[in-house]
Amino acid sequence: MHSVYHKTITKARRLQVKAVEVLSAQIGKRQTEKADLEVQLAREKMIRPVLTYEEVKLFFEKFKGGDANDSAYRTAFNTSPQPSPMNYHVDKHNEGGV
Image (cartoon, rainbow, N blue to C red):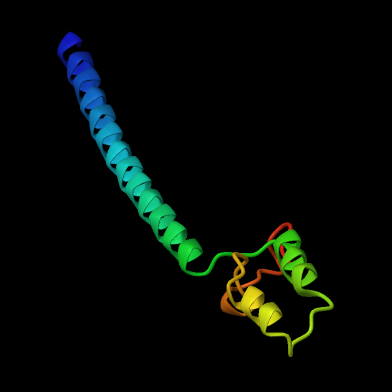
């Protein structure tokens, strides 16, 4: 009887070790996938940054009321440190987005 009990316990422990190994492998795989997705998301945000409402408002307010025929105004507009909103994606579903 002792031998049957010992074999059962040994088998149960082996199954536990196997289960832990499988779960550990899956967790490692998911962590790698998550890291890859975070890198991909960061790259996409660099390519197409999302402008906030405040950034767009500041851009337009800076040039509101300017004279398009004035060469100084056009130069200021073209050399503005603010990015052109036409070059960027504005996410309407993003909190704070336009």
